Image (cartoon, rainbow, N blue to C red):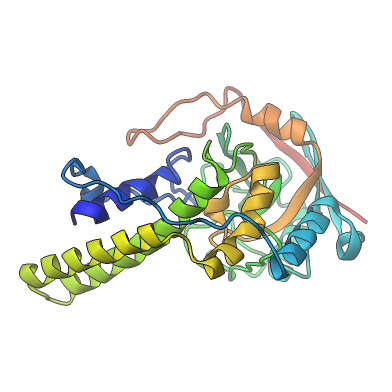
Amino acid sequence: MKKILTIFLTLAVMLTAAACGAKEEGTESSPAPSSAAEESSSEASLPEPGPVPTEVGGEGLALMEQMTAALEGTGDYADNPTVSIETSEGTIRARLFPKEAPKAVENFLTHAREGYYDGLTFHRVINDFMLQGGDPNGDGTGGESIWGGPFEDEFSPVLRNFRGALSMANSGANTNGSQFFIVQRKDALSGMGLSDYLLNLYMNDQVSAAQREISEMAAGGKSQEEVNARIDELNGELDGKYAAGVPQDYADQKLPALKKYEEVGGTPHLDDVHTVFGYVIEGMDVVDKIAALDTGETDQAGNPAGKTSKPVTIVKVTVEE
């Protein structure tokens, strides 16, 4: 891939550059730069971007109100079940959402009542990202659901991976077991303004679709000439989409959550990838304290290792009944 497609691939990588690339029992879904993203983009330049809507209206406002109610535990969420996660660094309390994520909540509550999590560690801690625990093996490779096998994802437009979200770790779609993570990131938009982030998010989706098409062509036995011709066409299409700006219907889908992310922090790139089933209601200071124990070490690939300067133990998870 070349020209404008190469440039947009680079933009796509920007969206998740601040996150780690480690993928053990997946709290991370950052796309690795393809060979196209490594090529020089000096031969082409981006057109001027088109308009980017930044105002939420209509149904979007109602959705934002629901998101706020879920975060604050008001309205329909006032009587939701709560849990206390006692750790070696302090106690974290969370509200769970059985209506939006019934299987994830049942799984977590049953494991908690049976003492499954007691004595386990937060085995993967990455400062300004998240804390991951719930693995009896203590290394991200183990754990199982109360049903003995993986269960399906449960995504809700109301529950997003905001700062303080309690979410299921996984190793791909519908592979939930016992592991979970708590989102700790404060700057959800990685220093970008809302309009820039939304534009990059939109183009990231367009580039991903283009990548899939080219990969399918290559896998289907198309000649190099045919692939190159289609790449040239896609370059022009992406150029046109960038110049046209973000469509209103796309903005209407994304803006309610992005506005809330801008306010409270979190990891928007994990939405619809990891099931959110709870929110921390007390103890974010403890979450930050644990995150600060990240040693900053990296693995051989240069990704955050998630190691802590001392073990962080989940002493006990209690269902507050």
